[in-house]
Amino acid sequence: MKPETSLLTNDPQLHNLPLDSGHTALTPMSQSLLQVLELRRSERIFSSRAVPMTMLAHLLWAACGVNRQETGQRTAPSAKNWQEIDIYVAQQDGLFLFEPAAGALRQLEQRDVRAATGWQDFVASAPVNLIYVADLAKMDQAQRWEQKFFAALDTGYISQNVYLFCAAQGLATVARAWVDRPALAQTLGLRDTQRIILAQTVGFPGRATHAAPPQDGRADGAAS
Image 1 (cartoon, one colour):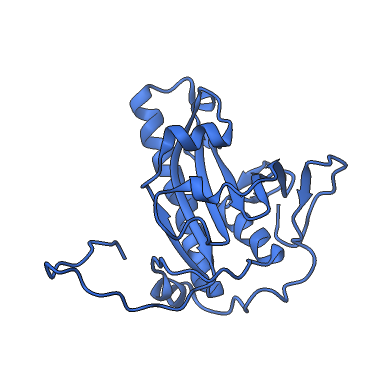
Image 2 (tube, helix red, strand yellow; image 1 turned 90 degrees about the vertical axis):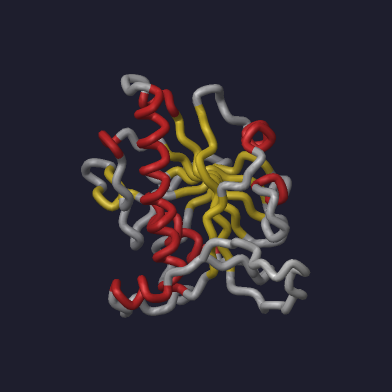
């Protein structure tokens, strides 16, 4: 689905994403790809300011939205076109599942589950946490090592799309693997065939505070 279009639905659990409501929430995409790559980085300080729905809609479309309506193929590559990666979205107003074909978010929970999406201290207050989940049932003809490899590979494509969108739009983001997967799987209500691959936090940049350096003089080892 192109970012200028959106499907309508009568399903009360589906929230149509405002992809066709104008681009006022977005900064002009006039930067070259090389300029966007220059800006790409991981950031761990987030403002509590909410991400506008229009911006979130375009972010999710960039992540793995449908860009070829006739075939249903997406913005991110997918091994053998399995399309096995689902994106769960945790916000203050609840838990949602992105449905690319409908261009919509399906509400799964009304409670705030952001704190369950990782052990980092910022996840509970950052406005958006994305959870990338692989459905191995869609890869049932592959061997287990292939399932793990391609699920991780396909998640990487999606995560990088999010990184590039955030760089272009002035958003902060960081991909995270430090997750209590069994507990989060229960929170998400995952099936036995589903596996949590990665989480990614998104929001507006926050204001840095200067913490005292560790007494042993070592850096914290955070990735950039």
